[in-house]
Image 1: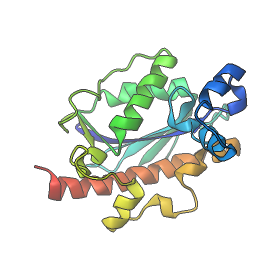
Image 2: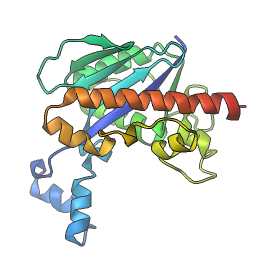
Image 3: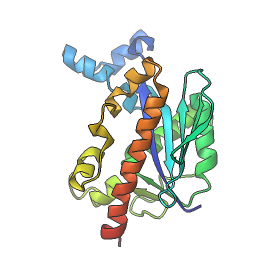
Length: 222
């Protein structure tokens, strides 16, 4: 196999689950109630205060893929929809399935994957005592093994960064952020046990990333 697009969804741990000294540490620089709420609502952004709940993989050449997702013990049976296989498990199980499959690809494609997705996956894997099978954080200035579209469209930090949603709109790509489900809702959806809604949202992100990749590959790649 040659290349695969990767996207993840994460949730933050409940702030009340942290020990008091850790709560104080996390709120160290928050001076107002508003700032404290921002900290509490940002726990999903960091591997030490959150967890991976969905890992999406899409082959841009075939349009087929897989979404590994947590279902919090609901035991949702594996099924396929529109060329995407949906396979559930706990965090450790979906991480193991991801690393076992991703090693068969020559190149991964992400959006902001060097700064978020891949470090997050690696740290959460270590916490779950899982050995990673590939290093996608090697030489930054090459897209041979890891094509991070954020890096490509900013020319490795030479120009301003924009969100996936903003790039999609600029290039006339339909963005999943325009729909009723978006990334900021993932934590709440999981509390409501709407695991498949998050999995489907991740799939839409994969397709948006694929279309943005096509623009880069056809018009910007050298």
